[in-house]
Length: 292
Ligand code: NAD
Image (cartoon, rainbow, N blue to C red):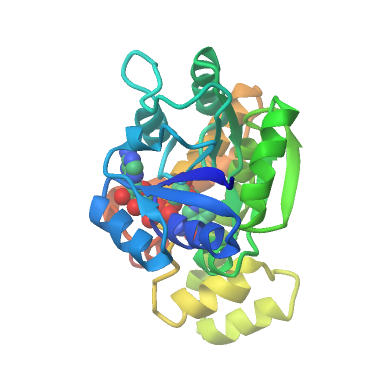
């Protein structure tokens, strides 16, 4: 029989990731989202099943979460007393692919382990476009090699670029630090564009020059031309989620007793934009910094 996989969280990223599990044809897939209409619509489109209650995933062997935050992952999987909401068989492997806080992931893993379940963290990078093409970078942390081995065939349908980072939480730590670097590039490039404009430089020409020069990064090749200079502001990555990630990176560095002046500045700049703008695409932060 096919391995039974459950997938929780069918948003910007979860929808294409679950679609790639279905497209592999090698798993029996069941979907859940608090937006039950979204789950039912996607299940019908993919020819898989959907459950209207999360406990309906009790017959699953591997359960993936792709949810906004650690708090939501925990609230989805555990009740207020820390007991699992899904009465799955012992040995079931949970795979949290959200960009979670590693300290909270370790705590959720401990509570799941008390009930006989394994948790691995497997956050992803590459945004919706690479989720669709199955070319995400995936960072896999696991304390238990046997659990990692059970998760890998499922993860592999979403991308073969899987990096085994170490114990539980190391994937989340790596993801938060990656997004800190990406956010630093975004805030720095935005600041530079705004200053350049003040001196009469054309932002489109500046972007072209960054990309021919050493200031080049994913931000200058993709984010600026497609979403900022082009004015589309539709990267698909929400400002609250990006800000959450730099805050996780800040906490991780605090937990290691490191001073982190760049991370503090980036977190402050993004936090100011979030406070002013709320739940918008993160690229709108450029307009906020420019017009402030
Ligand atoms: P999203 O907000 O588009 O999707 C979240 C989904 O979870 C929604 O469908 C929502 O209805 C559902 N949901 C919320 N609470 C739930 C609950 N309690 N039970 C079941 N379903 C619930 O978010 P996204 O952009 O897909 O991001 C998901 C995670 O991936 C985040 O941690 C984010 O930081 C990370 N991430 C996002 C991107 C990106 O470019 N968007 C890239 C890499 C990683």
